[in-house]
Length: 276
Ligand code: PXL
Image 1 (cartoon, rainbow, N blue to C red):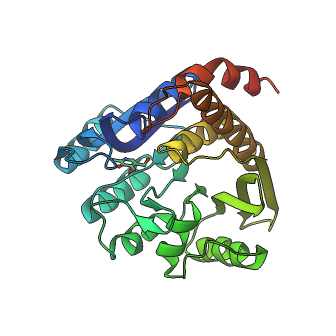
Image 2 (tube, rainbow, N blue to C red; image 1 turned 90 degrees about the horizontal axis):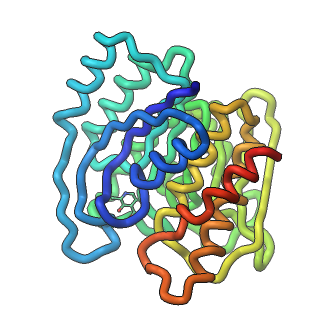
Image 3 (tube, helix red, strand yellow; image 1 turned 180 degrees about the horizontal axis):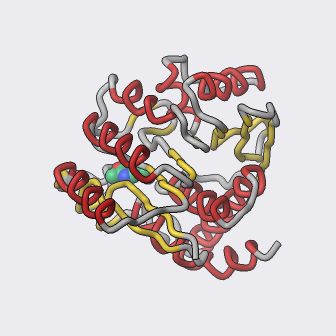
């Protein structure tokens, strides 16, 4: 059985980060170890959330795992709360990276803005995790901030290629970008393989709302597919189809929550989609 470790926060309510990565990877038949980097009462889009930083636990957890001889097929990172956590993640990459895919989702912002709590210097620090990562999957906002490039709402292919090439220049082996749209009503992800130069793109119908946590759902599903042997383009397509289904099911519920999507109800779809 494949085993991955997911390093990100535990937002008690909010359907993002660990509360989606763990169930999604489990449903896919992948063991998911966790390093909770912080415990929040909710994700940061709620007002007045509590935040308990767990940075001090991260090294002792790694020490124990090393002593136990644990190994992983992938190390997946998401939302990180501080500069120090980025440095400790690098230690996880050094200590557990052999034979593991390093998958980095630099969850920091969306729609041209950083999430509450991140200062303007943080994206440059997060950018350090691009170096040596097998797959990085920022959205356009996160890529633009990490690269110190202008965020654009409307763009063409050359802007997207510039971001992908920038991510490769930071040292990522394969760069993906999520939330890309070249055509009204279609939204998807693109990728550029730094070794072969292969470009991939995959789009689904764009649903008329933006939901929180869908980036985390997307990267968990992509990571699962990747460790189960799919290629990057296949993994990105599977994750896009699954995320779109999560949003569809959410919209189908009349009084759906505002803070996250009904990813749980899309589990049968995910398992079915994995057979293709
Ligand atoms: O979904 C990204 C995310 C993860 N973790 C926390 C967040 C957010 C987005 O706001 O607040 C704590």
